[in-house]
Picture 1 (tube, chains in turn red, orange):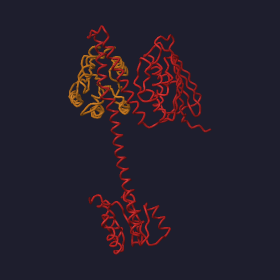
Picture 2 (cartoon, each protein chain N blue to C red; picture 1 turned 135 degrees about the horizontal axis):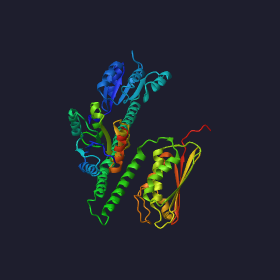
Picture 3 (cartoon, rainbow over the protein chains, first blue to last red; picture 1 turned 30 degrees about the horizontal axis):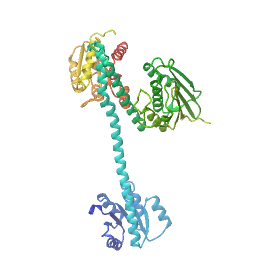
Length: 365
Length: 138
């Protein structure tokens, strides 16, 4: 019980004030007293007080000077200044130099002082709790980082071993597999790995600082597209880049956005389409970049359009179910860099995404 | 691939399946006849220091995993950096990892002793190309 009491240090060079204070408040608070700033400094080294009340007018060191002195070494306690003189200079000093919480006139009104002490203690506790919460949050953040790390390693590494075994089995022809089971295993493992990679992508997007650098969209789009070509070699890619000026943006997130959208355009093609196409166009202006990704694939049902950016939403009208996280990541990445996305789709005809990203390049005009 | 005479390959990986896989791949493709697997990076360091007494140290490729208990790949590199030039100059480190962690990737790219970082599953073509490249420069 004793530990829950408010601990107060009162500093005054007049002994009868110290005694009067003790007499009035000792039942409510745990009280320590000091006759001078020097004595008080000794005391607060060993006792963790919540509130310090100091008289302004003391020989050698005044109350404000004392508060100013301990401001950096002991910042936590709440400070209350007590003085008989209402000198404006003192008040200004007390607030600016001493960081005091409140200013009380001498002789004090018991009720007023008690109220001030209680309010000060409430603020003290609130600050303390805030500090604890920050520490807790930092810890959680740290754990989240470790979680990503172990997801990327501990979950992936056995999967990579499975893929390695499949590769080796093909290489040395040691497994007879007329029904193609190995291929099926490989497909499943790659699907699972794709999902793990999406989760890592999501966390990296939410945690990594946004960084702006120059982006050349011709090379960026080419890099993206090249990674998708092996997935479906019959798709024709049309790339159109209109970039007369420099563009600055967050490369990682723009890549994430493009990769997810192109991946969808590739994945949701019509199985019997004779000329599957993915059209990519970029237009860079001084303050924004507009990117369009267009396909002639299966399209999205209009009633599903408003849901496609929701986490784990999957349009049920196709036989190629995804993880339901790709477009959610796109939206999250865009909100990190201040971009917007619009979608237009005709079921059975194709889908068109238009994203607008602010150009972070600072032009003189 | 043109084989490099007396090339030997040290494998350091705590995952015994990967160790076996990599060994089989290398032997199957005849990249080297001498494959020395280690599940523990410390053991590999001990082995390398015992080589100091050899009159000739053969060209050595070290396939090094990143995440390992006790001593991880980067700690291995740190210790190995203090080895005499006579042995270091014959060793070429290729890191092999399933990590997608950017700090891992940046750290291995920044380390002058690492010739390349290859992703798991280890593709035999990537490995052969990397070894070819290392010895072409010699």
